[in-house]
Image (tube, rainbow, N blue to C red):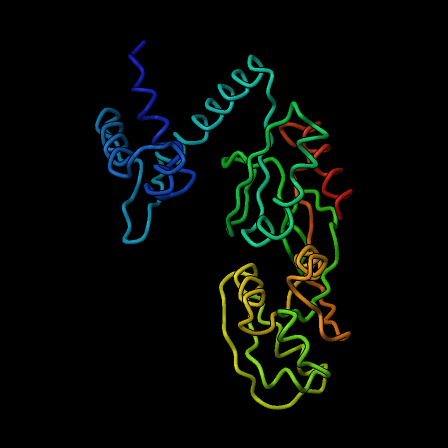
Length: 283
């Protein structure tokens, strides 16, 4: 039996294959980007085959790389499970968007930890969709208007009601929807301000400031830069604390809803059910 390649090299390749990016793989492993790239080059040299195509912006697995990654990912998962079993610490990984993580999930996580002290939670807060096969994700929360992909279970978390929010000082200047035209409107990637203004009967061209993430628009509203049109659940804590105010009763109800998503046959069915039940209890 030939000697196996170094474990560090295979770990560097496995992380790079999941992220398709040496920098992100290096951040996960805790080494430099150059070290990851060198480990992967050494592995390719040892195997005598290219595992990646190096692109101007990231990486792409070759056919050999795809064939190598799938069983390697399973092997590392088995190692992780063995370590968890010995340590007595179970771990679940939940995938959410950065905005949902910062404005809804993270402030509530202490409650889950208190209820399940034997479970370690790993939050993967990125915009990319989870595939549940090779990325180690157990459960996810996503917004969607369309049906969730086949082979996945989708449980509604809450429907989406968008509300106008701003700092208390700015909110005191609003007596009706038309007053919004005197202020900057903070828009996120959903771009729902035009629909809100149309339904509210507001005419004219507003001043807009655009953000790539909802959380950034909410933070800008808190700092008094304008008004955000935000998911009501994502600003409930700020409204309760008085950091934000809702000056208008008008809301925008949209079919862009939040869903809890998990495979029909999850790797850790008990942990996935515990997390799903907890998320629903918080909503």
